[in-house]
Amino acid sequence: MKKIGILGSGAVAKALGIGFIKYGHEVMLGTRDAAKLSDWKAQAGDKASVGSFEDAAKFGEILILAVGGRVAADVIDTAGPQHFMHKTVIDPTNPIGAEPPQDGVLKFFTTEESLIEILQARFPEVHFVKAFNSVGSGFMVNPSFKEGKPSMFICGNNNAAKQDVSDILDKFGWEVEDMGKATAGRAIEPLCMLWCIPGFMNNHWSHAFKLLKA
Ligand SMILES: NC(=O)c1ccc[n+]([C@@H]2O[C@H](COP(=O)([O-])OP(=O)(O)OC[C@H]3O[C@@H](n4cnc5c(N)ncnc54)[C@H](OP(=O)(O)O)[C@@H]3O)[C@@H](O)[C@H]2O)c1
Image 1 (cartoon, rainbow, N blue to C red):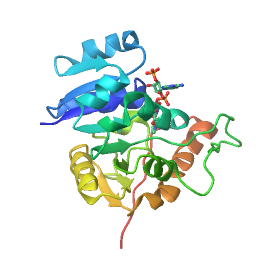
Image 2: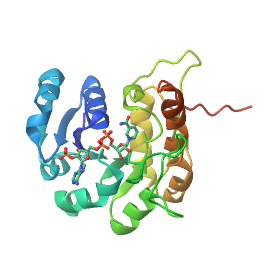
Image 3: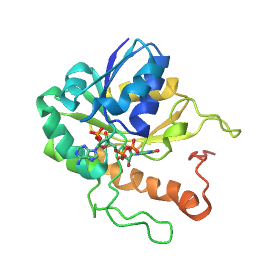
């Protein structure tokens, strides 16, 4: 069983935290304000703890960067980049800009490069793996769809890290689709825009992607 450090206190951090605990891992959530996680900690039980961003980064053998895309790099700087070195870091972030969506389409602050590439270039010793960015938090762990297992598109530069994440996704009920290097973030991150359109247009948020293969 691994120690999982999750930087974040939002819906993604809470849902993935409960998911890892369900599979026997110890989980620490990191935040600037531990008080806001007291209900989550009470619900999550003995294997759950809460600390600062730095505490969570130090604690985790595997880390999850579950914070807003605009602050993702700053949170790593605050937590101490040395605590991320050579670790598998699951990156569910999306580069959502400050402006509101237009016709249901989110605005990203990235242009050609994806957020995972920006993070990878800034922290070259960290093994980032993009995952969980293109589905709502309520469906991240063992979702149930009548069409069967949904697909999770992942990418990253380190194969061992992608294997770690693939093993987790397999347990969490996903078909893993490895799209290659961090460059593929340019295609995977915009899936978040596509996923959100039915939500903004028709208040429909309960779907996931599936890659069909002949
Ligand atoms: N919500 C979803 O269903 C979903 C699905 C897929 C992907 N995502 C992506 O996953 C990430 C997390 O999403 P979320 O909805 O769980 O949470 P969120 O509301 O996007 O982010 C919350 C986290 O960001 C941190 N944060 C915000 N502003 C900050 C600042 N100025 N400095 C430092 N930290 C700051 C907060 O820190 P504190 O704890 O200190 O307040 C908190 O931990 C995002 O990148 C989002 O796009 C979300």
